[in-house]
Length: 314
Image (cartoon, rainbow, N blue to C red; front, side, top):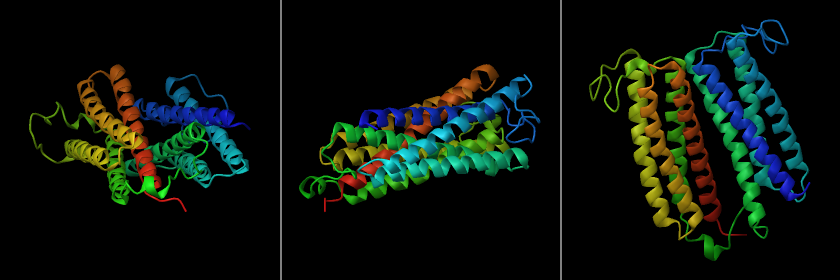
């Protein structure tokens, strides 16, 4: 398989995982999780489900996930067989396969057995990580094609890499871990149907600090965590710009991450403003999910490239 064909395969793999992510959010936003009852992999005991909106949404999600699972497995096998084999590429392909399997198992369990909202919220986080691995593999294949002389690990000579401090990688990892926590809180808000707990934005029910019981407390915690994430990513972007040694790649990733977190804040406002219109809310909530997924992926790529460029070649 040529490098161009492999890169194209990774693109379709990444796009397919994105569709799985979107389909899952639509299932949650339309409350279609029980559209196929408690049957899995059949839908209400049938291979072709009844033509109700909920069953079709849930079954479409399953079908897309199944096809993407086969594609993820194929990409993993192809990556293993490529010569010369890249450990970095195998790591990304293996990660996407592992989290795709975990996503499928958790989804099956959620259908067959009663599952708490706290556990259901993890499902989105796993889906986001699976997508991120496919995105990292696609980014790797593009980077490899644009710089064929670079090593599989993406390292640079010691004289060039020494300008990137290891502390930059550690800072990026800290922000990523915190970002995942914010994402989990957002998924928990969605699964507990708590979005209406705070009316208005940026105030919550007309108050800076509302009564912290019930849905209002859950939404307020997510908002506060999101505000802190905005500050953390701003500081990270400024730090990257200052300490990246003039590397445009890292500075661009820092800027993109900040632009995405700013867009995430605005999309959160849109979600709040459209709570009373279910038809529009489905799309604003979907936009909110797309932006945070892109932001998480950009942060992960920033961390990886910071680590690679801080290590001298051996």
